[in-house]
Length: 297
Image 1 (cartoon, rainbow, N blue to C red):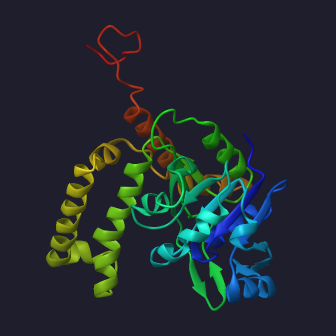
Image 2: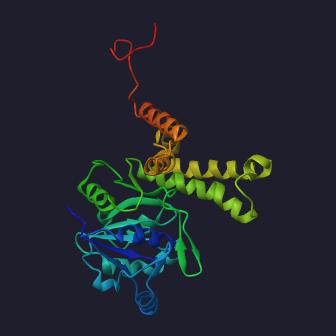
Image 3: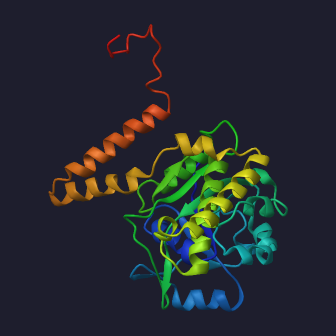
């Protein structure tokens, strides 16, 4: 399986990250799905992203049918009104990747298309609009996390998406715990980002205010209880998931190497976290009879 065409539903903050990352990818066709006034505006003005204007092809939904991969990047409130367009654009072999916030966009989309088209995913990108331009920091962006809902996790389409993202500016990671990852992001939005937005306070409010801490803790318990009732245990992923160390110390190490600057503290931090990931993955689960045991008895 090889992905040769990608279409983006929603060329906003999230969709712009995908357009930016894939625009320089060779041997693929990149388009934005839009109609009416929005389509005309995209055709004439293009997409101003991170200091550059891109001009992906603009297609109405019916002309996007048969595209290999659709990235659905709407704001949550716009999804219901776009479902018929998504159905119109999905062909027999189309993969649909929803990068929307929330925990149920895949379920909503599957009311219009067969669920077999959908691969679960999420995105972590601090993208925002300044005038007509969408901006973000590629170095610190965690990026797209995706994976199959059930085994086999290393499927043909997982591999095809990996091949698509390789060699682009997009940061990405494959996971075998995609639903837990989606709910974990949702928990962060509900328990931290939402109270901060309401109050207009920085992240330090949770250590400085017992009231903000109580609100956050109460929200966390409720979210985790609902998730657990749906069979999603986020405590497992909190204990064992891989950190985003590659996007921070890993990126700093690579940039330092390019510039000839030593980064020993970042290298130490990177390797100690990687060792912790290996421990969480069971690499060091030695028994007493194992030759790998090196501690003194």
